[in-house]
Image (tube, rainbow, N blue to C red):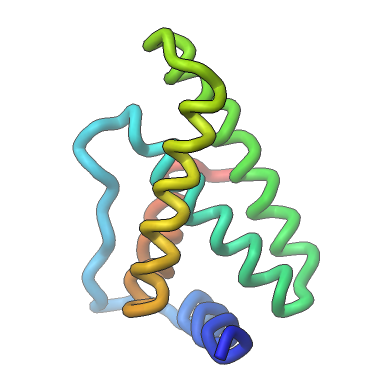
Length: 119
């Protein structure tokens, strides 16, 4: 079951999305690092399980950068690093639940995050 899910995500990610609806980021830009961090975390895990360490590492690096950015946002709001980690995990859990129902939506969302946070 998990392997099927991984293959579905990879297949959907590798397929062009012309004409498909785009998943959009939330209205609050302070949430974007959390939202996209979750997408990058999931993609890193998917590629890791598929054995593509290069792509997995690339997404992990993007995730790590967004974790640092997210922690800084919480620090500015006088919240702890632990609070930022919990909020990020909440986003990962929610996006993973969405991926179970609609992998293509998550793939499109990850693409949108690539546009928002390139490199």
